Image (cartoon, rainbow, N blue to C red; front, side, top):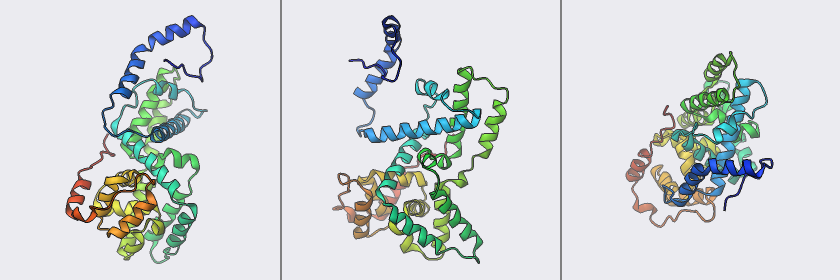
Length: 309
């Protein structure tokens, strides 16, 4: 059964029939993707919905910056095309969807506890550390829309891809602007990865570790999930997004991530109980059977390509 988009205005039956006929190849491709998924791991509907919301918010924000107007022209074109068929972008969407879910699992009072702990480390004699703390606290206070889009957390190559493809969508919509090239260049130059949680968290984790705050950094309740992920990323030599993706998954990869970071089994169990949905708390029966070296090797092999062009 073909279900037409309920948001579209009613069409004359002849025009609607012609449209359905034109879209038969796309409909068949959509059906093939559902019937024959390439992965044996099913994506949850919530993950797909979150990824769509993140991308929609990102596209509209970038379009508004490029045009100075209310957005709405580029999304319909992007939605129906393959302009954003870009594996690093999809991986970012999965990781950021995981990050949003993780944030919901940690109650607000625990974030406040982490803010108080960080504020206590502000030191007038250590300007670099104090600056890093202020930057992370500021990032935590971003608006709901900014947190949803993850715009500041985008690696520069993915941001460049998004901006250029949105510009292409605007051009195809006859939204011509002689100043667009300059606006694109200005927007790309203004994007700073150092303003994102991945960079801020990893940098601050390294600075705090020098002051021997290991126990606090290894506690997601004490440090906050962003700083906890930053600590693990710096400790294991992988990206913050990779860590967040594994933290949000639960299951076997979460177990191996914690084993690679040398958490005791009791510590790993507490973290898994805190972060995992009830149906995905990893079974730690074989936790000690996996060596730290083997776990680290597998984590290192997950090289994400988040920074690929």
